Length: 387
Image (cartoon, helix red, strand yellow):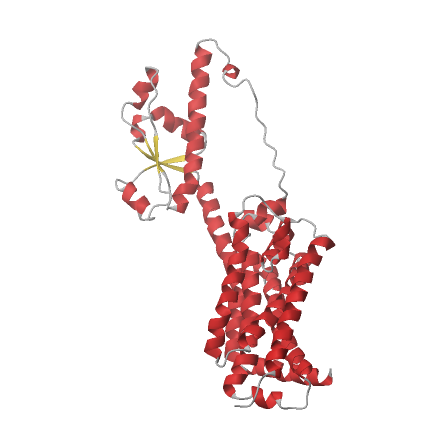
């Protein structure tokens, strides 16, 4: 243990000495998640501001005075659409859908015909597409009002057309609704843990081999187990530190949220941050061991980067299973590293409990992977020779 502690202190000092790399990793890993959260809140705040404007953009409103009267009674302001609104919508230079009223609209209503109103939008223009639903609901309300008036003039109750009242009940909790907006946060935390372990794992193995300092270290009287344990503990500590900072960075980032909706729904406190850390620490240890096992067989740092790209790709792609799988959680998700941690963190964001059985499976898998990786590194060091 004394030798392992000496190696651990040496590796921590080496990791802290490379301040430029450490600063880049810390800034990119710790600030990426909060920046995405703040950007998301800005996007939602923009949609909320657009909804609060209560503006309807109409082309040909002079053909429909009754429709204009209905919009104004709903406290909406009617604005004339620009002549080149289609081109502006395609180029995302205009953020409001346009309601096109044909000529003879009022005459068609008086004769009992069904005039066609057209909502012009662009699915690639997010602001216009978000406002299309609001305009559609307004037109539906106008149509229901006109229908009710027509029935009343004929002595028919409007309830005849709607014999059933429909009530909606949402079973999702407040945190569950918020997780639909913040579902990408666990992915960024996983990437922070992965890249936090990457540089340290590659530098302490392939980096030392390239610098020529690995062979003299192997020739010391210290046991191979102490060398490997000290190196692995140092890499895991760096990865865990970045995981902790990444999770805690979401706490102050909530002060910068601009969207009232997201600020009300997203409740990420010390309890949630602690659960995130408890889920990520075993994965940080396992990834550190696996990256070291891959890099110890390489002679240069660049070769180790190429060898670890497969593991990086696998860890970054596994959480996407939850996006393509619409059947919800499956028991096998907990047996796959990275995917299991993503599943557990998503449950934390939804406010769902984490029973011990769910935590035990990923913990056991990560423990096995850590042991396998450390043993592989120890065997490679045992076979190392001065060249």
